[in-house]
Length: 91
Ligand SMILES: [Zn+2]
Picture (tube, rainbow, N blue to C red):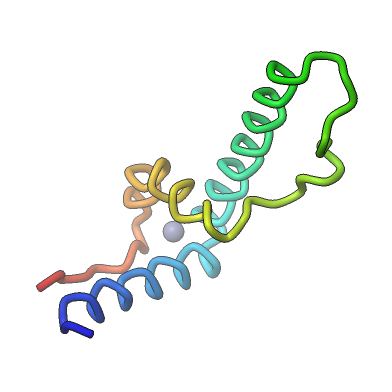
């Protein structure tokens, strides 16, 4: 793997660790994940109307790992306002 790819993976790790350990950023991500779930449920309601849902709110209680980074990407500008945000240099 290239050095820059490893550096980017390192940035992902630092970002993840900060969001996990920082109560401010953790709360922002928690809120964004709840909003994401609400959006998915609303989209399903529009698609399926009043018919029984293939997966209701009780089944969708977390953002799938494959979507977490897209959620983080949406809130990234707000996360970076954190005074404890890790300072990094990307090669
Ligand atoms: Zn933070």
